[in-house]
Image (cartoon, rainbow, N blue to C red; front, side):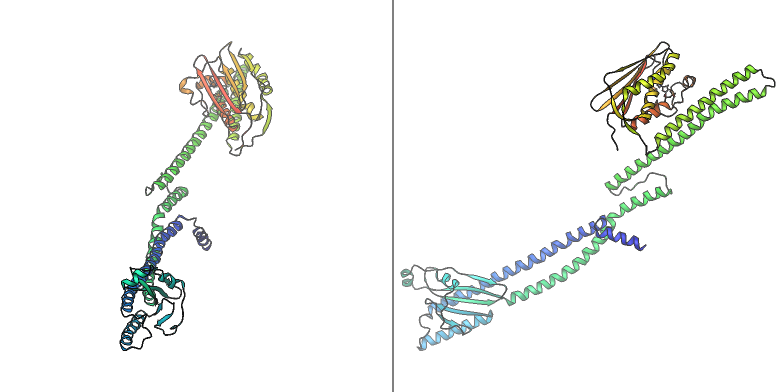
Length: 502
Ligand code: ADP
């Protein structure tokens, strides 16, 4: 149990399970956009808030700058005259208010780069020659946001609106001369605070979303993979033998494909089983036939009290021929069963096919002579091929023997050997009785005989061509036949010169 759980966990973690993949995918699809959205929104807020603040402060500073100019703050900042002092105090108060409001610091710098007012009061009288100030004197307004130190810095020009000054100097900004610069830095605390609140809220929302997505991903990964489990269960039921029917899981196109393939395999297995049963029935029947004959012969001998010796002899001869037939069937069956074994031990050797053919024909010539059939061998070129000698002998013997057996008186058999660079062909043609067209598709079946009684007479078992075809297929070759009833047949065997292992 624990081992099973461990194994499942391992496949799950390695993402080899479809369920795990769906789960992770759903999680990513749900979480990544929400994360991106949060960062996007917060970032966007920060930019917009800074920009807005700069614009607001800049506007107020502009108004203040006009005020400064109209009160000649820059020229009379040291004057002790009563009117100047009062207006200066008013402006200073405005400056204080502004810097308090925005938690910032405002410095007023004149054209000599001298700080004439600092709301912090530390830099008054000092000289500031910074890049921002110089740029502002040139008419370039600058605002700069320093997130790390938490402030926004900006410059505002103090422009003289008097016409004489503007026409005298070319460095005018908005049609007037820049007489001084206000260097302001304000805190971004309020922005940061709002961002923190935003972030916190987004985080809570995100956590809730993640929990929801986790739940949805979990449920979906289970629901979506359920049909595959149903397929496994259905197959297991067939395997265990509870059901013999073809299975059906129509949930997905994919499961339908899997189930179809399985059903086809099941069909093939059933067909195989049926053919095996039929084969066993055929074998029993074929083996029983000679036995029945022997029994009938023996019984009829026993039934006669004083049977003459000649009758004994005659019946005994019949019995011997039935035993021979039984023997032949068993020999052929053994040859076939051996070839049916899946791990065929083919003994592949390089063989001279011409020599082998000569040898086989020599062995079969007495049979041909007995039937008055002429056997001719023609070889287009010498053939050396990688084959199993025993199986090859079976193929050739069966074909030539059939050509002689199913021939007419004074007939002929022609064996033609040829090869190209890949295959060699072995063709056996005869002038025999031929095979009816409707039988051509069945001649390779076990125990199939076109004319049962005729074939029995000749001593056929109906297994020869089944054996031949098996042997040819084992060599990865092919066998084809053409035949005209009453005129003759021609079997063509094509086998690769070099044996192709699986
Ligand atoms: P058998 O042992 O009966 O010859 P085979 O499997 O070798 O069995 O052949 C199957 C049947 O095919 C034979 O019974 C015969 O009717 C037919 N057949 C095979 N070869 C020939 C041939 N050369 N000419 C005519 N009929 C043939």
